[in-house]
Length: 230
Length: 185
Image (cartoon, rainbow over all chains, first blue to last red; front, side):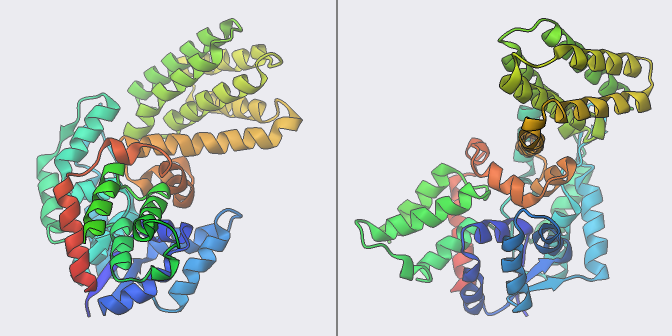
């Protein structure tokens, strides 16, 4: 069975924009499973349910888990791979004599699930995991530029990490809403104003950006240009 | 406590003592600038001491902004001097207790402002979390370091310019959309 793994971030961006419902029709088009790693479920549902903030959002996510739209994946092999990835990733960069713990177990559990299930994609909105998988040199540039210190790179561990994650394809919530738009899933929201399609697409792209999806203003303009030209 | 961290915290405490030594209008700006500098160690070492001093510096800047005229600098200064002395003598436990006392003092500085101060501390955590994310630490890790939820952090980060400052190449965007299109066709 083909599958796509979701990090907590894209589920947060979609929920905050009242777009979580898109997962159901997207899943029908995909004809496979949508999985959440167990720790992501903890962040999305269990933790906010214990507080006042984002409680209703947690209930919305829970509904899609209970319906089976998002399934929880957890097994020993995934856990072992996640720990291995976490150890490698967090000993790739050194500053002032200290290894920078760059990623969290939760993100690595998602990556590990992708590897173990041979999934088609990892949906992740945050920048660091994506950079580490796709363009670690850029990650080094960011660390150097923002921390203003020399960064020593453990090339061997970086190579190991890249080798373990080389087949992972990453998409973000911004690509999910673009595809939903292309598929006409958002058509009922087309406004009765000038440039309705552009307005609709612009609204959802900016919606997910403003709720934390790491997409730039220039990328949004590029998407709009590509989609409206069609 | 790591010697590098200790040295940096001592320097931050000295600067804070120097800023608050004389009550001036520029204290707010100076404290805010100091707070921005303190966060780098939180990203690198991710230890509780670097994090708490960063949160403290930011919270102090906000409280001075709000209550400068009425704020009792002396009580804060006494605690800062005491924290500095204890850390200098390697009494790490006593240093941490003094920092805790500083937070308690800030929280009780004005009963009318209790809610505001709680909010300031929460805002400080989110703001520092977003800085740590900007430095290249992952979102979940940044949230964990500051003890906040990813919901809160994403909500805040989305309103910053972090994603615009370090964007992807345009070619990868086209590839990504093309790949996603293939998945859902």
